[in-house]
Amino acid sequence: MLRKRAIRLLIIIFGFYYYSYVSYAQSNVSVPDTVIPRGKIYSIPISGKIDISNVDSLRIRLQYNARVIDIKSAAGNDNFIMNCRTVKITNQDLTNIDKATIDVSCDSISPTTTGIFCMIDVEGLAGPDSLTNLIPIAVYVNGNPDLLALSDAGLIKVPGPPVYQRFPEWLGQNYPNPFSGYTFFHLSIENETKVDFKIFTNDGSEVISKDENSESLQLYKVTSTGNIKINRFEDVIDKGNYELHFIPDAELASGSYFLVMLTDNGIYNIRFLYLK
Image (cartoon, rainbow, N blue to C red; front, side):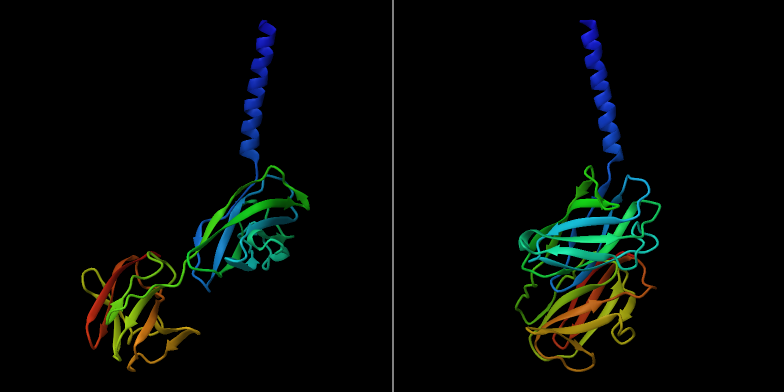
């Protein structure tokens, strides 16, 4: 009786340590949740670790809804697990377009196999408010499947076109907010007018105006065939819907700011948050 209990106890202990070892040692591939505006291309990191020594080649298979996103290209560098400058994209299978698959692969692998594998450039296709999971479904190391590899899917959202409110003058909240690289504001003009844009700190100090920094503030008219850049701010602009793109320069500090829009008919402002 005691012998049977001892054997059972050893089996439980062995199973616990084996499970702990496998859980710790497993490779994993992860994709972050991302919002990609329709028609825009964003770079998404594929990260994780490979718990196998002497890795010469690596291939990751991704599954996604090809109606919602398009994987355009992939890139590695010396700081990534995949050192290839141009990571190969192969074996695209669109037989089931809602569950399309594609492989990203590289034959130059860093000795450090934990961190970012590569960056993939993804274009948002569908709308409004379409969703898809970008799922790592298989990992191949040196041509062989890593059957114990874990995956963490990323939820990719492609928001629909903005809905513009219809009243004489309107300045909408920027997207994304907060932001670090660039952001854009939607605005509506009902009648022909001159327009000016300025950015202020919370204490009222002016930091940017369209005259001083035309490269940071770029205005586009929204049309059914695409956006048209307004090259001369001093010109009168006609009625319609517009986007103001804001690309901060390196000197702008992180913090909360106000965008102010001045027209012949009024003054409008929106608060936004910039994070370097």
